[in-house]
Length: 197
Image (cartoon, rainbow, N blue to C red; front, side, top):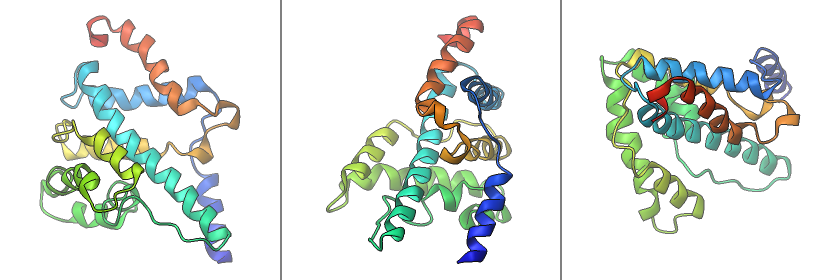
């Protein structure tokens, strides 16, 4: 247990810190730039793509916190998603599923996301005894047909950048920072003229 604690502290110490809302806005705009060069040229394409990816990242981060809290008091925690469909499995740089997909055939990553992950997430609401959170996940993902990013490399770049966004590296004075990300994007999109349309 102590070894895991010290590993976690080392990882947290090496993570990117967002001390201001502007630093988070700038970082997210960098993710949008990857999306814009990756077949998501306008805001009507890259904002929805960023939204579902960021949602799954935040969900995983939140459920990780809930699992730790439950473990601390000896309570049971059941995640909304099962392996290999959790962010930590398929999207995190060290995720078991991600590593196996990257070692597989060209196109295996998009194949998994488009043919397995997205259908699984959309079908959660139809599970017997689906939780309210699972129903929300299905509703949010209901409009996502496939990954819109043009290459797996660009998609992995987006996932790596989004992975850096977690509760531990956002200053506590910015408790609503993630909800303000979209507010931070609006002026940037306006600067691009038609990009904001």
